[in-house]
Image (cartoon, rainbow, N blue to C red; front, side):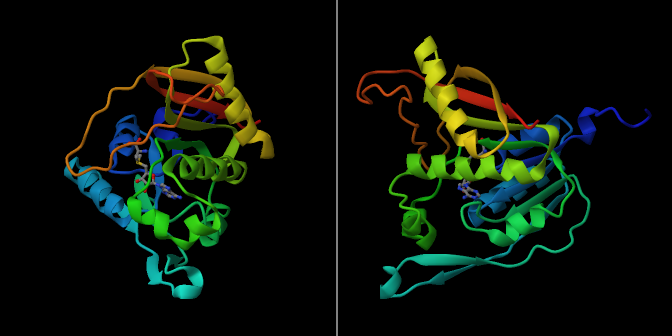
Length: 247
Ligand SMILES: C[S@@+](CC[C@H](N)C(=O)[O-])C[C@H]1O[C@@H](n2cnc3c(N)ncnc32)[C@H](O)[C@@H]1O
């Protein structure tokens, strides 16, 4: 049937957590059309600058208003998010939002055409996040816990945003899966994350992780070994990407 085959440039990708835009730039270079969700306004500006300097037209939707809370809420802060509304149809849209708390974002996404892919790579966060009401309410005490909770939300989001046959890619820094038990533990961890969905956790790919420090950047905290063994034994890290498929 004419027009029924998906070409690379037709591919619609939803990216959660674009950071400074390295992953977004790589996806755009492959010809994908991207909508990205990012919680940190500084990262939104960094991504906008990176992409505009590389010739991309960027549509930014700034919608967060932070509010300081009083003693009853432990002097935390919360961010209120505005509605998203109707957007231009451009190659790259960057939306300020927080997948841990943003019901307006989820409502907007559920009105959008389905995505071919959902990616959530290398989730981390800024140090102020520990003072947010959402972190306190969710019992988030450290970066690794935050990362897993964000990924859980992303698995649930996949139910809403992916087309049938669409893929979810979750990438993280993990113990190198050089043994069957480490590989199985990583896959089992993702099967548990996918257990609230119909997604089929399909495969694990990995490559060595080389730390590449960025001046002024926040140090990346690795996720500890997932095979249940003591976390204080020596282990090597790899970039591990787990792909799941929506039936
Ligand atoms: C280390 S960066 C990763 C950047 C990019 N994915 C990459 O691989 O180059 C992780 C990003 O996820 C964002 N993030 C963390 N939690 C989020 C949430 N709940 N909602 C939206 N973005 C979030 C952070 O603000 C940060 O910019």
